[in-house]
Length: 265
Image (tube, rainbow, N blue to C red; front, side):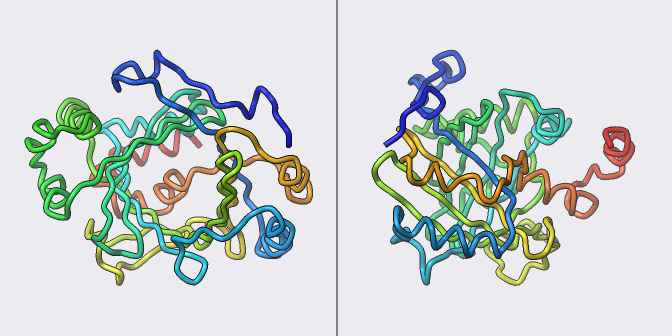
């Protein structure tokens, strides 16, 4: 078992003061790896991890509708490498309305803190229709804060991100390792429940995103396996990758942002 200051849970009261509670952050490491590397890594990790029981046939599809403000702040802060930032999204699984979650993901360096609140399909439709009043009346803090973001900062849908996730877990250390394949941007509408939405590939073929998350500690055996064959951490953001791929189709202000995106590059 291996402990280090980097892997210990920590809190940031200032960052989460508006939540009315102290937020707990987790480590998040990302790697961009090939399918061949994933096959080798899975064989090595199977000694220490077990498949997540929530996965059907070992995997499930994740679909997230990401929101950003009129200045595309979440996107630009990611591209500029801002240390402290956040993203809002609505997430479902396997295109089903059985579980719909409003989520805010905060990031500070390699640490993350995720909050979520369940919403109904009717509430989702009201958000798309810019009907936010019910959020302000919600007993959930996260919904009320989303109301503020939508009304004051004009948060609006920007892109749908799809990928297929293969999850592995270890209860000791609250470790979760996932292989995220076929990262793609869905276009055509904001109907996240439509399994037939056309998609655009957002990362190179035969490449996938390996994510390593843990709260308390990362067991030494797993730590020795990572990184994979000398791969370095990647700063890849699925949201940014999909927005780059599809912004001209999904962002109603694409003509405004075209010159700015060209300037950034």
